[in-house]
Image 1 (cartoon, helix red, strand yellow):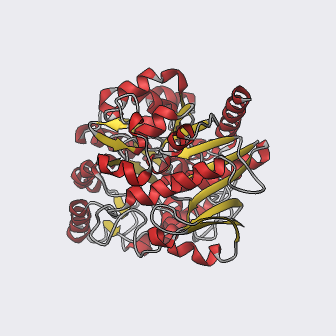
Image 2 (image 1 turned 90 degrees about the vertical axis):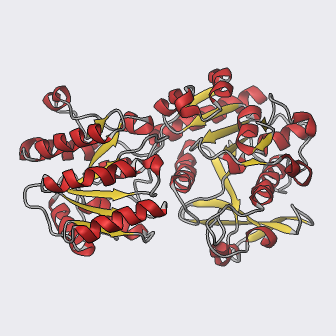
Image 3 (image 1 turned 45 degrees about the horizontal axis):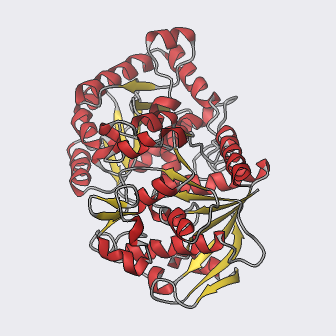
Length: 480
C-alpha cells in the first residue's frame, strides 16, 4: 500500500504547530502497518542542506511561474519528496507570513504549486513509485483532489482537517493562474461566498474526510465550531471520521529525553523533582512549597483561551502557585504575560522564544499543564503532558475532551482520573478548575495516583495509525 502524504510542514524539518508533529509522527507509524508512505512538502531554505543530499526524480519547466524539481531523501525515519521551487519558497522568515506578519501575497501560488505537484505525482509523474491513496493535510493541500478530478482521475483522496479556522480563501482572480476550472466555481464546488477556498475544495472532492479527534468531528457539525462549513460537513457526515492524534513517543519520552535535566519513568519518578527545580531556575521563579508549578506552552491566541488565563493568574498566585509561560503570537497577549511577569517577579516567568528544548523542559518540570482552549481540534500539549506525568488542566472541547479523564469525585474514587476539565470556557469555570487542582495537590496520595494514571496512558500513534491504514485499504479496494 503506497500512500502519498501532502503537507506544508513536517517535523522535525519545518514546524509552526501541531500539523508538523502529526505529519512526521504518522508517517513513521504507518511503516510497520504495511503502508509505504512518502511525504511531499516544500523545500524551504532551512531544508536546502537536506535537499542537496537528495536525488532529483522529477522536474517541471514551469510550475506556478517558474521551474521546479522534486528531490527524494530519507531523514529522521521519514521518506521525503521535497518540492524545490526557488521562486516560491526561497525566502527568509516564516513559512506562511512575511516580515510584517501578514500572509505572503502569493500563498495561493505557493501552495497551489504544492497541490499541483502532488497531483502530478499521484497521476504517475515519478518513474518508480505511484500512490494507491493520497492524504492531503489542511487547506494548503486542499486543491489536490480537485486537480485529480479535473484530470479525470478517481484515485482516492483523504483530506484531514487539522484546524478548520484556516480555510485558504482567495479572490476569484486566482482561478486562472491556478488552472482551476470555472465549472467548479459553484456552491457545490470550491466557491465560498464568491471566493475560492482551498479547504472547501479538499472537503468537496475528497473521498473521505478525517479530523483529529472524535469530539471535534462532532463539533464541526455545529455552527459554533464549523466556521461556515458545518452544512457541507453535515451533508458529508457519512464520509467524516474523527481519528485521534498521537505523539511520537520516542521523541517525547521522559526516560530517554536528552533535553531535560533528569530522566525518569513510571517506575522511578524521582527525576521529575530535579526537572521541577531546573525549570523554576530557568524561568527565574521561586518553587512553590505546597502548591503546583503551572506550565503553559502555546501559541498566544484567543483560540487558546489565554486571555482567560491572564485574568485567572492573580487567583492562581493568591493560592500559592507559580506560573511559567512559553509562547508567542498575539502582541496584546505577549504584553499581558510580560506585565504579569514584571508585576510578580519570582512568581511568573515568561519567554517568547520558540525553543523545542524549552518545551520539553516545561513538560518535564511543571506539575500542571494549562490548556484552556475555546476550541481544540485535538491538542498535542496535553498528550505530551500525560506522557511526562504533568497533569493537564483543560477545557472540555475537541481532543481535550477525548484524552483527559476529569478528576471529579467519581473518577478520583475509581482511581482512573488523569487531569482536570472545565466547562464552559469562562474565567469563573477556569478558576473553579484551578481550585480543584490546588485541593487535589494538597492530598499527596491522590496526586501521586493522578501522576501514575497520566503516565500510564497510551498516547502513541499505534491505534490511530492502524485506523488510518484500514481507511486507506478500504478506499483503495473500492477504487480497484
